[in-house]
Image (cartoon, helix red, strand yellow):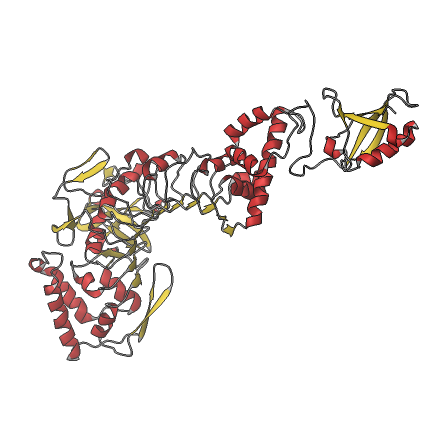
Length: 602
């Protein structure tokens, strides 16, 4: 049961094997299968009232097929020859089939490859004696896991052993979508690929994790393995297993089980893939409980890619203190993540985690992110962030790179605003969305964020930039924009008010945008206007001296005798207008500000 098959190009899992009882065809062997593509099925495992098997969640994803019409896939070495050498050499096929029949010769120890080498030597002798000859391509191109092409040259020799000897130098190999279902007799794959470092086995017909353990345990040079899109059964433990104080303890008899031999190997699951550095497990219907049972086999993995899995059961994620200590990259893209707290709790203390990929999830906000001492890059593209406040939750990290593309707040606030705010709030970041930050861009972004935080406060409190409670703003900033307190110390207050005069406005340390024109009211207390307010429309940049000249002509008083004072708003105090180079903007003038005209005593 649970073997994987392919029929008419579609994959399925065997759920039943036996006669077709409802049609009284007891002499024929049929398979009840559950299709990977649900729409291919016809029933839920029950036909004409007879239940052969049960499909997942009772879906109509099942079918009954004649056993002789389905393919159970290929052994790994068969798939290699079928993909690259067109056909399997008959002598090699005969030797391998003979070897699989003799179970008593099965290798008992992991390092013992003597029998295997003897069989291979016999085969090479036959080939050299020209008893086996077959046409091959002179070159073969091996597709790597990273989709590069690596050419293996055979220099025109048509003898198979020459090609096998060249395979022993091969370092990268991809057998994606080749219907590989079994590894073959233990030790043979290891004898062919003595220097293999990168292996891609995506979208094949493996059905058990123990097949993967058998494979990696005989490839000690292997560094990168991808088994994405393989549908493996839940991991069988064959022994006691329990979690105690967050430490996984496994019994000594937790050994690798070789299905092809029908027996356990004398090799522990624990650490069987400790030489592996990169493990790619994309779209395999895994849960965190599955991952917890897998991790002990790969304790020193440096890059773990778990994209497109059902990773929502964080309460089941547990691993030993000695596991994942070398992990540098964790990719959890498209895993239905909605709460960052579980990520922080589970992985925040890993000492070497540098890159965290959380793209295409359902994150709407972040808690204050602590721990993650080694983290230098975090990717949050295609999530559900609407408000920019989540950015200040990253301020304690020493990030070098941050990616926040394609979130709703970008459509709402614009790319430039989001970029500037991210630069200002995460002071360590050097790259935003793949674009490097320049020295001047950082300064401009910090000043922009500083001013925009003040303006947000003014709008919320319905106060003016020249008349507000700075202490109240400070409390507001500590809660909503903690970075602003640091930026005020760095650049000064762009809306600084004179603490000695209520409502007074002094020249800003940073230029504040003022209205281009405003209408003021002039009140003449001594001249011909007789206290009657006279409106005048002036530019905010008009200097104090031109204003005095205009008023001198208006009230018929010599300019040297005119003394002006301003009341910016009705509730503001009146202050004197002095200063050779001052403008109306420097006094905070706005529409309906009152300018009082008096005479300087002689």
